[in-house]
Image (tube, rainbow, N blue to C red; front, side, top):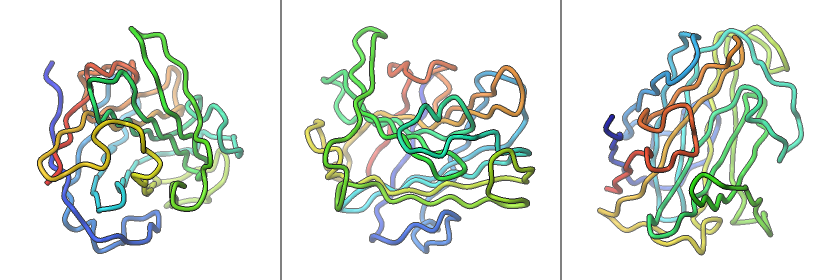
Length: 217
């Protein structure tokens, strides 16, 4: 299976609201997320933009229940409903950045060294000011609460390049290629349903060889 490829357009910086209402999003195309495991038939999609200072991500997820209970940043939120981004700027380094956010707005940022499938995440140091990720989530058709019945939810966040300092290829110049992937996990059914923008990774989210290609315009 071939990996996915997408152009990432440039934008001026804007505030994230959680619902994609920022004018810059009109320039970005929706990237469909393909089911790679499980049976829940919820349409899922994402958009990506970048500015001189960082990258913007927007996820839109149809849903029926917010299967999430964790409220503390840094917890294992991947065990509940979540969307995830993986960024691998320099393939010479087996080192990439992972970001997760739940419908409740709880986050997990990690730097992942992955040697042949043996990996462990490291959380950011001095995670504050211009290095901190800006984030927001919005729930539709129901309450923004644990286990609430809903029609869907969206997540919007900005990852500053200052947080990725030390990874090769940061910040990206026009025409530069990064590898990466966009994911969703939903636990309304058992086993959980997984989606990926580059389905070549399969349900193993850390199969970085199956990441797609992000080309900066």
